[in-house]
Image 1 (cartoon, helix red, strand yellow):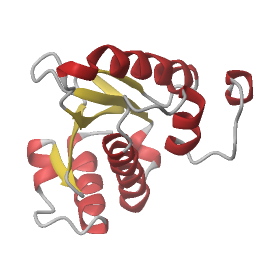
Image 2 (cartoon, helix red, strand yellow):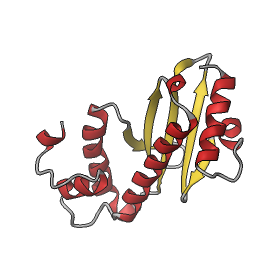
Image 3 (cartoon, helix red, strand yellow):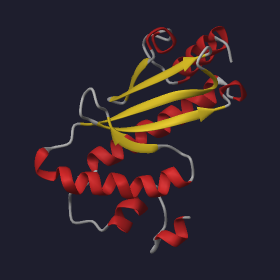
Image 4 (spheres, one colour):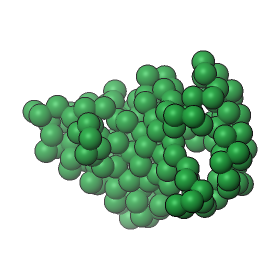
Amino acid sequence: MNFENYRELCRDASIALSLPDPDRLANEGLLVKDGVAMSLFHDDEFVSDRLFCYVDLGPVEEAVRTRYFERLLMLNLLSGSKTSGVYTLDPASGNAIFCVHIMQPERLDGKQLAAMLDAYAGRARQLQQMTIADDLSFMDTVNQLFGLDEVSSLNELA
């Protein structure tokens, strides 16, 4: 994918998402969807077969930091094993983030990319609303986050 294809894809996705500035995503690599900040990057000289997407999950309160990180690591076990992205910390802001490489972007159209970005924003909102440090078991958190019906073990998720 070259930069012009990337620009067109970003513009089409921005229009599908009803973003106020359809050129911002391609020009700045930034968008905000339903209050969730995301970055999307493409560098056809560095790696031309993927887009790099970073979804800001927000700050991690000091009081729940250990439990939050524990949950993010467990979520990595699920999402990372299926190559659907990983959870980590942004070294610049200290916020939790979801990172995903969108492979073969030339196969996507704007509506498909918009649906992916919308789903990532939805997952981020769920995590933000689900007070991750609450008393939900990990499996209950997974069931809610991924919209699953009563998965009772990690083996069922593999």
